[in-house]
Image 1: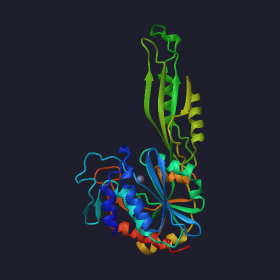
Image 2: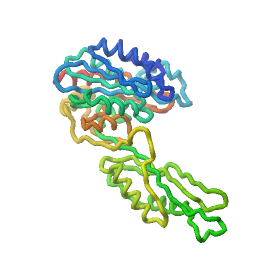
Image 3: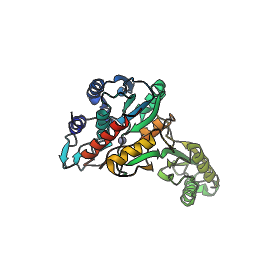
Image 4: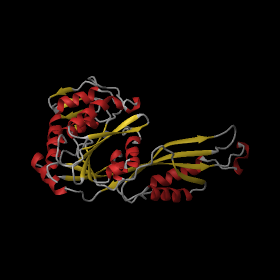
Length: 362
Ligand SMILES: [Zn+2]
């Protein structure tokens, strides 16, 4: 099956995470992986299955990563999002770029290889990474002999020669200001919780405490509560942080708390609760087969390999918590999470040839 035919098949099956329908692709992927010489296991998450595969060759393994789920169909599509529509080199379809295209390149390149290869196709990436967390936490053995993770996520304009070796993390804090809610008639004796919080937000806007240039801090929302004719009792700001790898969740919490202490109120800083852990940032200075990959890239694209750090968060961060170098090396395209998402078919072919050439080495 050509890359295009395979992509057409993958796009035709609705795997929007919001519908929890990722299993629609399961049979196709399992059949394909088995035909390609892999033994396959399923790791269920909330009734949906992650797929892990191993061709059980000897030596250290290279692990290829893809996510089965896509985002929702947003308004503005001019073609049927589930029908791959090809115009010259652009193949339009939901998830074609993010990241069913990358998955087809993986499937093509890893067919009947003599090199040790593992594959992880995860669910729920576009949501809160429940799938990959589940695999990372409960299938530790699967990763034990993996020397390098290659994620075929979109390259987001970095080109086929652009490799991402680091990403920011992300965390959300609840910053809560506690007031003293006396009757409004006794205004002088109470404390309106909104003032310390706005004070805090002003300090936050003026401060430049993050160590890492990739770190971004922003207030996401403010909620307040006032009962009857009293002063405002409590006010909570959600503070979102994209974490560069030199800042950590703990260091940011400390910095926010010390800003809070400079206000006139009782302000506490806590992690906003979530089902899966927040992801720290990561950056790998070097990775296995780096020179070989640089050569392959140069041969196929005529360009020098470039290394990048990205301001985004995904399953790549979850895999990076294993301490195994993770590189993102994916196809060209556009419109991820937007209408009229497309992937470049020629880039998929080149990517799959580059992967294949890498797999000739041991
Ligand atoms: Zn993605």
